[in-house]
Image 1: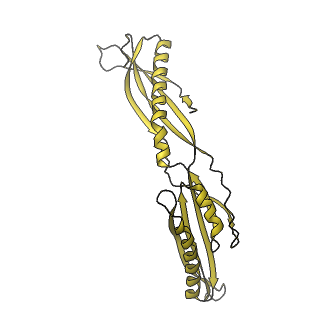
Image 2: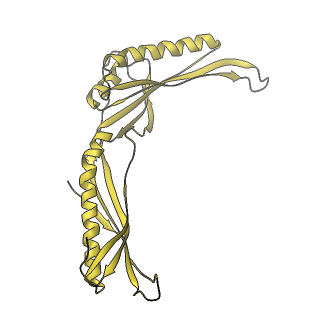
Image 3: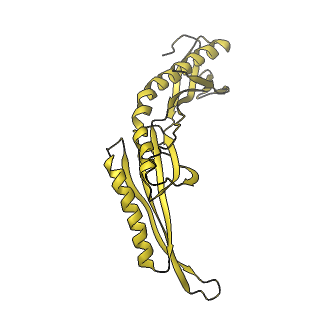
Length: 236
């Protein structure tokens, strides 16, 4: 696992809680650790648009196209591996520019397919001919993120403590006491963030799979806070 660590600039401040107490010097710092993982979830949005003079006819055409795509998608549906759901379904009138009268109807329908079985979903694209591919996106699953997040957090904490000890010595102190510490992680959701792409129509019967390249995602954990510098090594 390749970890990238960045430490923020340090701010040394002095505060006095009572006139009889010596100043308590505090060191503020931050450490971030991260690692890269291959994205393991793909999401594909299929869609189609229809136009006609009759609202019922346009709606029926949209439903027919969506039903045909659903039939193919449901053949490979498996929870977590290939999840299928319908997206937007709209129908709206078109108006004459001059008279304002309804001249026809237009509508659209959408189908969303996503999951970890990237190969099966890529093959599905070649079997759906009633809808076109509108958007494709990749993401990191919750399971994959959680698997490495603990290791990344441990690395960030270790770096935080090491930097606190190092800078304590550089400022002439022998130790430190941990103060307030905040730990945050990159919590991007597991669902794909779809990237727009030009609609890609797949010829019926071509069975042409979608080319895929998932790329990598970054899991990062940041530790930030302050430590009290001490003249005795009481760091813990």
